[in-house]
Image (cartoon, helix red, strand yellow):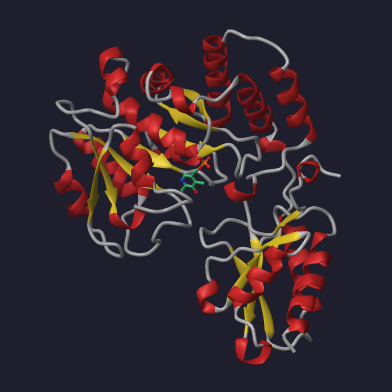
Length: 368
Ligand SMILES: *Cc1c(COP(=O)(O)O)cnc(C)c1O
């Protein structure tokens, strides 16, 4: 019996992705061991924060780094750092920041919901959100013209949640930031490349520790030394109610250090998804295709189109029944309104694709 079943929770098969609502990542045993060892001991936490920064720097190529409890906290702390710096009075006044530059410029198609609102996280860090352009169309001029003496930073969201077409690129944001002498913060929460955006010239980059890095509930900010020092300083202010503990930091660092050596499983994942589609090819009303990740990552998901005229059930009905069972099967449902259900192979444990096929067949058989 799993630790969760001991508390009466159902077994969950996660075919959805790195979803916070399902516990983000299941960590490798070595990460779990490190987490457990750290939880049972003491450390000077400010010393640990500095040591963690050195590890983050070596993995990301940044000057320094600051561990956080997640990318959402990283966003709030990064924003606070560009507004308050290391000034204690300002640090203690956040999120109230009248009288100092506090405007954070974001393209309208980047004002996303990732499970919570990114603009709310910016506000928590004391930022006054300035959305520019339109939801599907932003020109360079929209961004450049918004910069004024109250601007604290530009903010870019690199994510499949963001509008992909019609937005200005990271390169353009960096060019504007350099020209105007203001920092650029990138939310790269779920991205797999931990060096790219620093190498491009971003000042601060925020990652989730529980997504691509497959750590425990955690995250990091990497970037310029002076700004990272300011990020650490926010733990005396707005960072306090979102602090990461010693065990979280050690679990995160362990996951981060093995990140580059992790095996590339995308080929096997693709094969498993092809197998799943093959198993469902004679099921009436379901047609499967392989779909690469919207953000261009090497993630190959099975996309199942549900024809409700044939099955008598909409994609929403099927999703609801899969989630209601035991084990509960959680699929990826961003396109359920189009009758599409996606299966994400990354979080699947060995053999779970067989259970998914059986459950889908069962759910659709009941409709006939
Ligand atoms: C998941 C996500 C977050 C939040 O990450 P946490 O580590 O759960 O706090 C923020 N921004 C984007 C774009 C995300 O995808």
